[in-house]
Structure formats: structure tokens, C-alpha cells
Image (cartoon, rainbow, N blue to C red; front, side):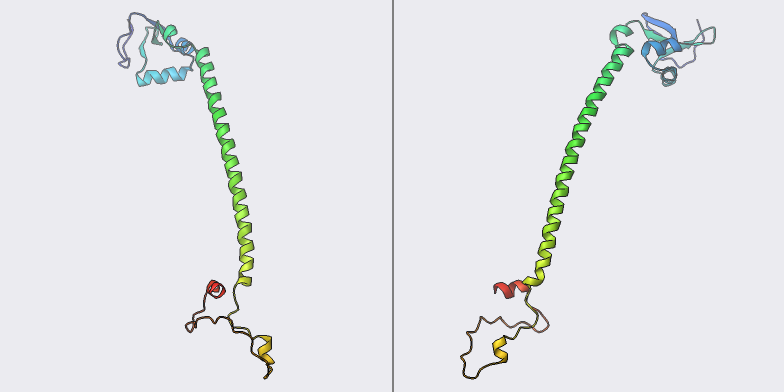
Length: 167
């Protein structure tokens, strides 16, 4: 029997078949470096032959228990296609939500600008205006009815526009 490298995971089972790294890669549907990495990690039984080559032990029931490379690859491709379809749907939903949010933001910005332009109209002037009649007051005319007077404001403090407007 060949020299034991101390890396194999135990003695191979009765039903194990001894193959080279290249053959194992072909059977498992992977590349040779993947087989070598499995050997390093200790997940594949192996030994060195008298010819110096490394041999790997694969279970004889491998074909029955594990799908072959073609079937496994097709299943994986279908799974990936499903994931891509799902992600595309998610992306479309996110784009639509972003478009709606942008529309709402644009509408609110426009409404805000319109309201901001109206603020000067709504604010009363800081000094009370003289009515045109009071400047050229006729001594015999009856004075116009007095509007409700504003409560006196504190010196240095201006009454808010909404209080002047609504009382």
C-alpha cells in the first residue's frame, strides 16, 4: 500500500473507489484545484501511490446520492434565474417607488414656493397706514366707523401677522 501522508480523514470505506485527482474532478464536476483544496481541508480521503501520484477515494454510491455535474449545474442555473427574476422585480418596484417619491417632492416644493411668495401679501405692514381721509380731514364730516383696535404691543416686539389678521 502507498505511503500515508497523515491528511486523509480515515480509512476509505469498502465501497470507495480510488481515482486520481483529475478523475475525481471530472466525476464531481469541479476543477482540479477544488479537489486539491478539499484534500488540504481534509474533506476527501486520499493517499499517495507508489508512483508518487495522489489518489482520492470517492464513495461508489456517489452517483446515486449526489446529482451529476450536468443535473447539478442545470438546477443551479434555474435557481439563479429565479433569483435574478426576483431581483429584477424588486428593482422595478423600487424604481417606481422612487419615481412616486420624486413626484411628491416636486409637488411639495412647488406648493411651498407658491406659499412663500404669498407671505408678503399676508403680512401686515410694520407701521400702520394712514387712511387717505385722515390726511385731508374735513372738519364737518363725520369720522368713519372705527375698526377694532389691536391690543397694544410691547415695545420692541412685533405682533405676529396671523394675530393681526385674525385678531
